[in-house]
Length: 532
Image 1 (cartoon, rainbow, N blue to C red):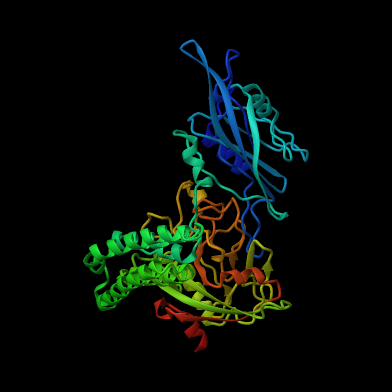
Image 2 (spheres, rainbow, N blue to C red):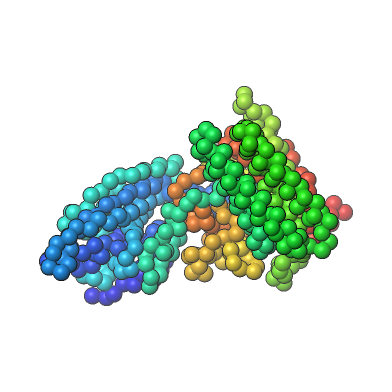
């Protein structure tokens, strides 16, 4: 019987749009070892966000937790060992996925191709077991038997339902030949994720100054402190405030040293403002004015962000030559969007503010700003609003993107992904295609109102003018580990009034999008030539 390696299973599953099932290694009749049930990554039929319609990743998701009790012989004595395992079942369209993971290293998996509409299939793999494709909501017979034989107590922890999508599932997870299986999949249940747009933007700046990052972390931790009841929260807030003040006072010279030479005076003023603000913050805490804590925290973090941006002396890398002549945003810009909301008695005109990040997506952000200055989006309707995303940017007519007047053709841009730890973005390939399953993106799909480009399903470099904002918050979008990261170009976040997105409906009209700050960071603009 041929041996099926984890890498082969993953490759086969993605190539052939297979179903995947887990089966045990051969067991001894003498005892049932815990290692018989091991981990496999989540595999599903490949699918993408099409240019016109962004597909939801899964129809249904169920998260199960198992507590396993095994009897093992050790030095002639029987002892009971309790182990916890986790299973995730994901179902999208006609596909069903199943995964079990925990700490042991060895695991067995087999991919079973669909044989017919009833989902009958099989595969051979190492370990002497046979696999059955998972039918709707049922565990494979082989797994059921092993769970029964091993005395597994199955407890349903959570079941999360997502609106049914007519399209296939889209997911990529890590698979390695060596090392604990949990190392590959633990990111799927890691937490708490960073969901604040401003925090994500601060973390994405190309700076390395540790003291200012320590001040930032102490102030950001106050958000968690405020979840404590009553005055108990103020004790934690005070601790973090004092920690931030101590770090700043001890490292003012170090912080100022990293500020760009042309911004030294501005940087010194910002540091003084931060120092004074921290003192005022401590006075608020002493007065036990809990209501004033969050606004003061936001104010101080804004100053921290300004200090960190002042540390960026110049654009940190060269854009590849083939894209160097496109509109590029070499820095950041702030954009204001006004939307006319129809048939809503609670809101008529929505005003949202977005920060567009050219440090991590210069080509994508530059393309968007160039279209904004052409007033491309003004008067355009919201074209999709289904609770998962809000989408627009498909112009009237046969084309699905912006037609450049100078060429008469649709202007497209490449897929652009900046990975945390890399010095420049990746172009033209998804992280899945590159095999970088564990990589974390600088701009993840974490925040409500994450701004990204839509594209054609099987063409990475087909994005043009269609944009979407992610709304859905689910088990599939944890911090830097969800199924969208590394597959679509994120280039900003809504930083003011993101909740208004939930009120948008198809047919609501974008009255205007305007750049309010940072337009001077746009190079190679074409809107000026178009106006001429």
